[in-house]
Length: 107
Length: 107
DNA sequence: AATTGGTGCAACCAAACAGTTGCACAAATG
DNA sequence: CATTTGTGCAACTGTTTGGTTGCACCAATT
Image (tube, rainbow over all chains, first blue to last red; front, side, top):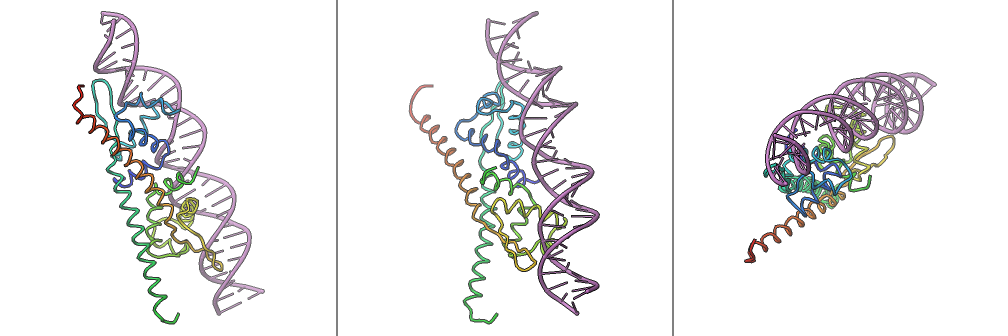
């Protein structure tokens, strides 16, 4: 799995997106601190945090015996780029169609 | 599963993203036409197209005995909005931190 | 030194999923 | 009418994954 794929995959889960939202508001936080905001176990949260970290969407900073997680939103640019690429291709295709219709060529 | 969730989930798969890219370039296309661009079966493609349709990212247009699929990129706006929301919260948090540092208050 | 609290690792389970094959049906074509 | 070609539906398989419990470890506190 390459980077872009990891990012999209990480965003595919609602709990993980919620984690990012929480971390955008208040970071860094440890897994145990995050448990309160969710209904699942700390281990469950840790798995999600790991997926997010693999995608580069979250950074871990060990501090004493704690592990503090904070948001790292830069990979989201890649998502924007991909979407923009799709939109560009689509717009260009529409333009081609429009030109074709406006030219008085027969079908 | 609500709409936004369906969209994110649809984008999580590499084959589905590839499908969208192909459809952005050349649509509408039938499932059988699309097979050539991939290594998987028509049935596999159909499953992916169904997921994309559920998310509103693809539209189906029956024509004779064919079923023509075309891109419908509007749900991608929702993704952009979500990313922008995250970025906004994050920026605001950074600003709060900066203000806190610049005010000459003691720690 | 003993206890407490935060952490990671491993095994396990059930559900979801990507992808397949097989078949039956409907619409074009001859 | 017979044949071909595109389609949908259903069943099956292997793998992934979200989530759990249990345990061992390590650092801080007393």
